[in-house]
Length: 520
Image (tube, rainbow, N blue to C red):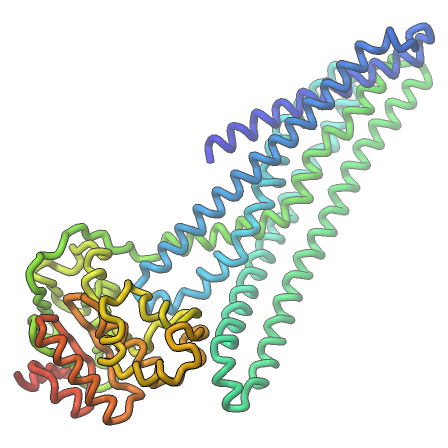
């Protein structure tokens, strides 16, 4: 960022120098041609014209280079901020991520794009205004102090109006971002639930609400555009008035011979350059404000997010024992530990705490004698296979979903253990069958079997199951539970969340999350 700002400043200096130099040179050439007919030959004018063309070329090259650097700087900053937001979002605990996902999605998908205008147009214009405007006013003062006085009187009006307009625009930008966030969240929820709504014949139920949100976003955007157009009109009017006053003053004095032609032309050519950078700043201000609002939202998201796991400890090579203080529980290798209890007691939350995704509600959790907070998350997660209540399925082939967390050593055996081989036999292209987001194209039971196959076929030392037999019929449930017990018998540490009698029956240790240790 510092290199970009330094390079932009250097380009601004070159542009300012070339602009002033070309105006002075053009004024000298025109005045010479008008006042001295003998100097109109090509030989006499060749040198001054070459200098003028060179200055124009330098200015064009500097502007091109500034634009190129601005694009690179904008892309780098947007990519860096997007990366930080995504990394922070993916390190959030599941409940916190679910609560704040809409804010992160709005900032990443649309909001930060406004920064490109800020870096490519607004910031270069601001630097140019800080360099070119005072330098041009100083040069005008050298040639015609009266024109400089007029410029200095008209010039402060533009920043004053920009500040007043900016205060109103900032509120509009915040409102527009909030409206966009709400609309995007509603649309995402609608798209995600569209298959279910269509199946229930309720797909039209959300149309009115989406239309209301769309209208609110349109009104907010149009209000911002109205302010932008009005402010542009005011800034253009002020700039035009300033240039017109200079032109009238110079013209009247030129008629009466009170000012040399070279000085008059120089003042006239430089007067627009005094106001031009500020006009560009005003024109880009409103678009840049959206990006600045999104950046503020991104930094707010980053600053208020809990710190990600920072553990560095490695796991021991021996079999892993999981010790939990609250509720008191020890899950040992070679045994199935079943967690039971009423809904909402925190069974799924405990699994997430064991994974290191959520902080423990009380006490400590130790994996192989090491506090889970001190473990290197990537190394720990490589040793765990987890089946959530809703298996994670991505758009792609069935094979890609089975290998989502790593290739399975024995794919046919894993499918057989989860009864997923029966599902594969009925799919049109077997493992190469394409499914949609969340497993669209498979029934709930088939999705559950796919998730079970992925976990049962994993070589991980720790297996965590959250309601593994949900959506399964009784014969399939019995086969799956036998496969889970066999994995424990082969030395894995297995924790199962469940409340049905067949699930409780496979438990070597059954822990009631309500506070009662059921049995061993």
